[in-house]
Amino acid sequence: MRVSDRSAVDVQPDVQPDVRPDVSVDVRQMPKGGARAGISERALDQPLIVRTAIELADRDGVAAVSMRRIALELGVSVMSLYRYVVSREELNDLMVDTVFGERPLPEPGPDGWRPKLELSAREEWALYRDHPWVSHLVAATTRPPIAPRLMAYTDWRMRAVDGHRLDFATMVQIAIMIGTYLQSAAMPLAQETQAARTTQHTRQQWADARQDTLHRTLRAARLPMVSGFGAEAFQASEPENIFEFGLHRMLDGIATLIEQA
Image (cartoon, rainbow, N blue to C red; front, side, top):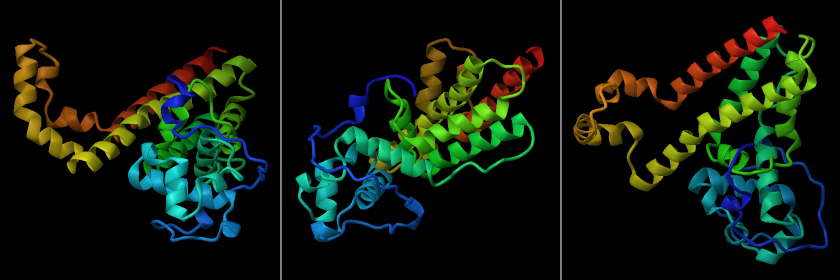
């Protein structure tokens, strides 16, 4: 729900079909695997298309997902896909909605606004760990995805802070702030996944190989604080640790806001 432009992840042009079934997808009940050889187009449906797109994104990154690539995976014509998904933008929305459906938030959830918000944050973070590319689809757009199960997280967070003398706009801002923070904090997960796929090196292996060069560069630049960046600081900068640190600081700030309301 942040910046950039939706075209960053729109690969194929929109083609208008004559049919758009309303089919919900349960990613947990669908088979996983590689390419499927030549299924009958009569067996094609929206859940299968979305599942295939998610598998492609998990395996090769979201940039690899296109209508042409999905058709190739399924062994069907590209045009046949548009009977079930009207555009790449709708496919993005369905992918996000399906993934968020993997972790619906419980009702009523734990007691207290803080445990509720923390639970919702950890559940969303877990989604981004499982599917690192999702944060890109959610964040890299000027318009939020039309994804009811994503929006349910916003609604759940607003209800968590309702009844604490906060006005509606403030509750909206709290809910969106949490989601925006998580999406931003999760972006390195997607970047690291792509970097590891491309270079065949983990973040730690990259740092070990570049350590001497990094220290020389920072010392030459006369940056006294960051030039002391060692193993402990590197560990502190891991995405998981940044997530934990930022989450608790954000919840502390909300606590102050509620106390002052």
